[in-house]
Image 1 (cartoon, protein in one colour):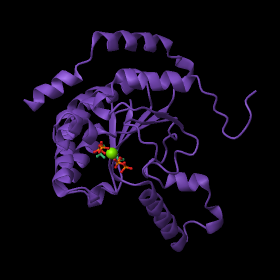
Image 2 (image 1 turned 135 degrees about the vertical axis):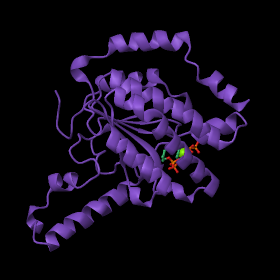
Image 3 (image 1 turned 180 degrees about the horizontal axis):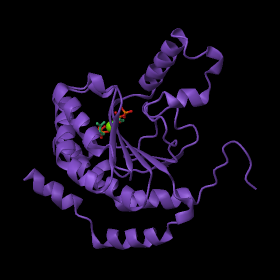
Length: 263
Ligand code: IPE
Ligand code: IPE
Ligand code: MG
């Protein structure tokens, strides 16, 4: 019965499709963001409001993820980074953590063929060695199967924390200094960026946070220095292609100054 409720709620209406088309026409191809990052939040509240267990909220959230990845490829983004599990999310009840890991494994096994078909390169970022073995296996398989893809770079932040990422980077840089491969005077912002999980990728142009909370929750702390925030009360399971396009259209109207003056 719950499955039907999820299907009912998730169906895209004709109105959404009209809006999508209108907004797509409004997209300025000369001002496209390269990298969009999303904190996929609100699954639990979405489910609770419907009298459903939180795990069904996470399951409904996977549908949004599917739609948003596809839309990101279609509009030509270079990088999409989604926050799926934080280094702090282990504090949740064991059953919820287990069901999130199960969903992740299921998602990777089910979707990888389609992702590869759409030329999407999948990369998990975070402290992957602390994930349960079944999740590590699914991640390795997704990496291997998609490593030659040259379209969208799809980063899934898994057991990810911005502070843990910086800690890892500092440790690796320190090891190079100790080995005499790098001198302390040569450590600069570029060197730090090159030791993050996102090495080689542009910083996010847009950060999207659904579900109404106004915080970064330890996501991409270094990379967000000049990112434009796009916040909405819409819960992640209700987040669709139309919202992604709306965020991009809004981004294109913004005046980014990077500390300088744009007159
Ligand atoms: C986001 O939804 C998914 C994860 C954090 C894994 P939440 O589970 O945080 O949903 P809310 O914020 O409790 O509604
Ligand atoms: C951030 O959401 C992490 C993910 C979406 C994976 P949380 O729900 O964990 O964040 P807080 O606890 O509200 O800050
Ligand atoms: Mg939350």
